[in-house]
Image (cartoon, rainbow, N blue to C red; front, side, top):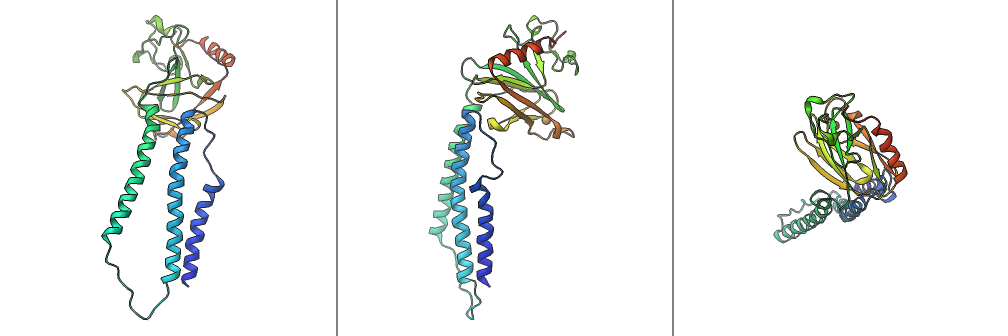
Length: 266
Ligand SMILES: [Cu+2]
């Protein structure tokens, strides 16, 4: 009988490990340097914890098989071993604190360091349940905002019509960026906390009402990628999505031009 329990343990552990080896349901393609660094960190953590998992399950099955038989004498009791407790507690502590420190560096490069010089600034405003991207237009300056001028149809973020810098601002429900060009996203929210995320960039940042949060990225592969709201923000949260269009220069200019015909502030 113990051999069947041991086999069950081994088969379950193997079945759980197989999708990781075959990369079934794997991460979408990484399209930035940051995304590749996140993946490298993820793979390191997965390898370390995966080896420990397999060894632990193999050992568990072995102990069940070897000592699981019914014996006439009473079971030996084990009263703890301070040396072993110290060793495995500190080994686990060193391992996880080490992985955390390494991971924090990757995370901090996006969240604590500014964007590289020449980054294009795009403001992204979340609201229940859409995103609005704003571009500063040819003058390179964002116009002031005035909440009293918000109009969901013609001026969703409330660009102040009295500010000349806002005349050429462009707003759009999707975000376009240039391929291989750094972008700084300035995140805002009109109502509740939302979260901007693009899986292919391995980025996620909350948009908090009353606060400006920033993140930056350089997308290296042209294409269309989903921007999903990652914060449960209300009943329509499930449909709060937009798209990040990573475009070649000519297409990018065309994209901006098409949208500049409907300026944000009339
Ligand atoms: Cu949301």
